[in-house]
Amino acid sequence: MSLPPFQLLRPRSLDEAVAQLAARGPDAMLVAGGTDVVPNLRAGLFTPRAVVDLKGLRDLRGIRFDPARGLEVGALATLTAVAESPVIRAHYPVLAEAAATVASPVLRNMGTLGGNLCLETRCLWYNQSYVWRKALGFCLKKDGAICHVAPGGQRCWAVWSGDTAAALLALDAEIEITSPRGARRLPLTEFYKDDGMDRLRLAHDEILSRVFVPARTAGYRGTYQKLRIRGSIDYPLAGVAVAMKLEDGVCRDARLGLTAVNPAPMLVTEVNELLRGQRYSPEVVEAAAQAVIRTGKPLKTSVSTPEYRREMLRVFTRRALTRLWSGPPAGRAGNGRH
Image 1: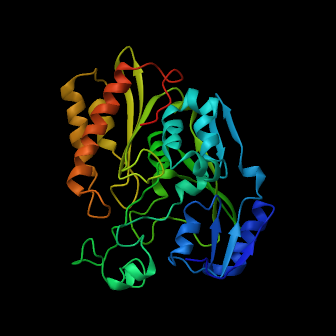
Image 2: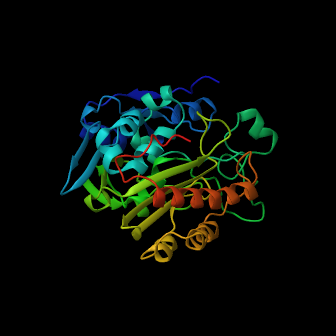
Image 3: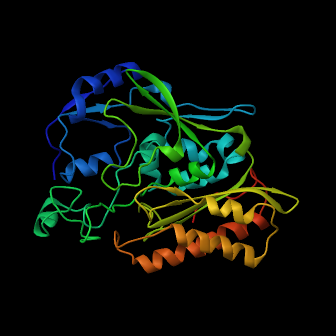
């Protein structure tokens, strides 16, 4: 399908961008790399009156690390830049691994970290052509009155399908949100609303401008495990990100994030309670895996069955924890591609 008609705006500064958003109200939307937004526009899922193109905001592309303050990444840093950054690979390997699994090399060259953190939720019943959706009477998320995943309720169960959010949750990241009222910082754990239709705590005149990762999680071992149909291009069907601090084989801190099984990426806080102070054992790892599958609740939102995706959460948790307990420290791990 062709793109719908809209006014294209190209601001040259962040202040200009938020002013343009505010002036045009809820009928305006943002585009950064365009790898998710443009296909959705072509499918008729969005019909904005104005699109604000952020590509000209060069100040939001930087990656900076201070050992005392941690990592700062501009929202327009490409996923390739994040995946290949020596600083991120050395100090925050779980983020580098997650970014490296997104889509394909061409799409990672275009897609941005901020865009990946603000993706639209996805569902088998929603991400289809207009003709396909019309034949089924549409759905609760777009033009219809029923959720085909859970027809008895009035909630949308479209899933969060980004990769980097789970990694950043595991790293205790914060984000900066900029609007005409100024800038504010928000823990990433508070950004997502666990609602397939209203997914983000982001007003119509606000832009996610920067990502901050604390110095205290620098050097944590990390890995990201991803389930997808093909080895590239595809969105995750399930994903597990783990960041762990080890001292002489003893876990001092462990944070595990999930993606693609709930309407929001989620931090499984029970994992840290189970692992802290523990040495590796199959029993400890299995207890953590059981906590993960109690939290992740995949439904029939994709081509893969909920039962298989749920089982893969357990497999990925065991695989990730075993790898981190037995592998090299942060900065000497492999490229993280699965």
